[in-house]
Image (spheres, rainbow, N blue to C red):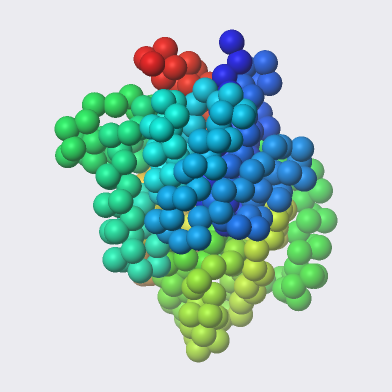
Length: 375
């Protein structure tokens, strides 16, 4: 039986959740799954990208965060496409998707990619989003969590409301990336951005948002530069923290490159000598699997699902979140000990091979079948 699924997501950016959905749309078996994409932001860049890849995409624009008018458009589209199940990604999608599913008498599941309270620059907005999301939890048929840590947090929320709903941890998968021309990739990126071939390039990829912890990476770089002068920091991504981070980099006189959003950011990885993910909260940390494939040593925060990916002091070095001194200590250790770095690189690359898109897609399809059987 072919299951007809509508994926709903904000779609206002091209972050980890969007790439997760895109992988599901492209890799689910066409014999098992018929899927359409629904985005909730007008002129959605994610909808445009999906259309360019031949994926049917519909925009149901929300005029503001609590706009429920798109519910009626979603209900109509579900009827036209004979949808069997709505799959929501993110707090906005949860709000309108769960209500539309209730009206349509359809099962609705949510993938929890991150902790809602960390997804907004302002703390009060995050707390408000969490409370609003909790209101529609009872309308949900089941949940997918991208890490065991996320599932534990979800279980606490469900228990608090006295809810017992199906939930399953399904880790994100990544494509096998082609780094066969790594030296050329390294040279091209450094030439493009005027970065010296001899410097040690410390890099990070992620949206410029407080939760990603770039502020603490900059503070760590300041500490590292007291002992060495050959460092250069590159941050790839865009977001609301851009101006704040750039002001700090200039004031600390740290050699830096803020490259903005790059559609194929993974291609920049061979240019780096160390990859750092300093997040304060992280659902899983998909970019770490890409860095491991690129054979770049990894330093990351000990938060969320990251310790589930890589074992500390074996496959990566994990530092305390929000602690520049500990982050600098881990970076220094990795940069100053090539043998240690090489050992970690080999271990991390092997571990990354376990997280495949095919497994993610098959596990997700199996969960669809489970939810529909409950109906």
